[in-house]
Image (cartoon, rainbow, N blue to C red; front, side):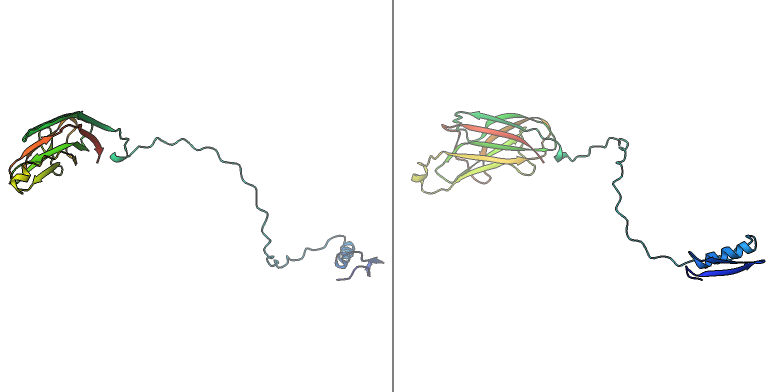
Length: 229
């Protein structure tokens, strides 16, 4: 290869041509040779492929693409909810009496009819009123709820008792205390529909009855509420 600025002389037939190399000396020389042979220069074989270049630097992040179109509307899904997730409408009732003054020792004291909406629910019942028991000898009295005439069996009866010990005959004969008390509980296993809820007074097992009184000189009430299980 000849550096630029040098001159080259080639004999072409009877003429001798001298040219100054302005650019690549090899290209100028080839041009003279091709001119000598009327442009009939043969193409040389291809060179060996060059090596891979070094990896380029990361490009500039592209802009966000155009938002895609809305998809097709899906099918309506099924609503699967447990029973306790369903909306619950409160259902309760209160029956009240200003002054029962019921002095029976055995039997039904008061009743309240309730409409139960569901079979798989429970009933919460409450009796609130004054109770009294007196006797000369040891005695026991029991206040309890019934549902359509039967005591609760889901799981157990709902009851309250008052027991008086024998003590001295003189003192026991003068005891006459009326106290506001309550009988309360939950009962399960009662079907939907009308339910007659009643409060009763009776005896305790293995003990004699005494002189009982219910609802003296005060308000008595039965409250019934339906609750989800």
